[in-house]
Amino acid sequence: MPAPKDLDPSASPRALLGAELRHAREKAGLSQEALGGPLFVSSSFIGQLEAGIRRMHLEYARQFDKILGTDGFFTRNCVAAAESKYPDHFAEAAEAEAIATTIREYAPSLIPGLLQTEAYARAVFRAHRPTAPEGVIDDLVSARLERTGLLDDPTTPLLWVVLDESVLWRMVGGRGVMAEALAHIAALGARHRIIAQVLPFQAGAHAAMSGALKLMAFADAPPLAFIDGLGTGRLEDDPATVARHELTYDLVGASALSPSDSLALIESVAEDCAHEDQP
Image (cartoon, rainbow, N blue to C red):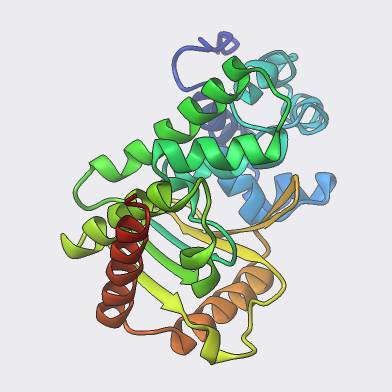
């Protein structure tokens, strides 16, 4: 059988590389668990590579070529598949998000990227990079707004967010920017495109006080959890770890206001911001 051809970087290289990995593994008669064993990774991780969800790092590509006898194919092509417009710590999560069927997210301090307006995103990036040239900020904003295009589909992905109440009251970019940003979330909720809840201050201590959490489910691969931090991020695929984070999210949702009460609060704060922004 002829050796596989190098991938075309314009044709979803990560998905093509994953398909080739599945083909080579099955040809070798190996299970996902058997292939992952020598690399000390789980069968879930191999499944996510094959589904094009996870990034294939160079050290794994070299091992795949050795185990599967693919004559350097994965080593040559993993570089193209790893190219991304996002920061390294978020690249895998962003690309997994793009093919997720369900996204559930707890946001403790700012509006999630999928729900941000242009002005809000610009204020966030400018605060993070106060001395960056305007062109750099423009590129960051463009990449973030491109992600929001996921919501152009009327049903997929299902997006369910829990916003800490502090997200509503932190005046990112000023009251006018916040009025627009919150009105945008309220509009998405009112037309049933997203589920939004607010975790009120009065809820007190809760299960996710240590930080942000994103859960992603897929049609053909195990779920993932993304733990976000200051300039860092970590994707978790271990089933027990993901299950623990799913419980955390469920507990936060149970402490939050109902979607209807949350929508009313978001609309109220948006109106307050709009009125107070007037001269």
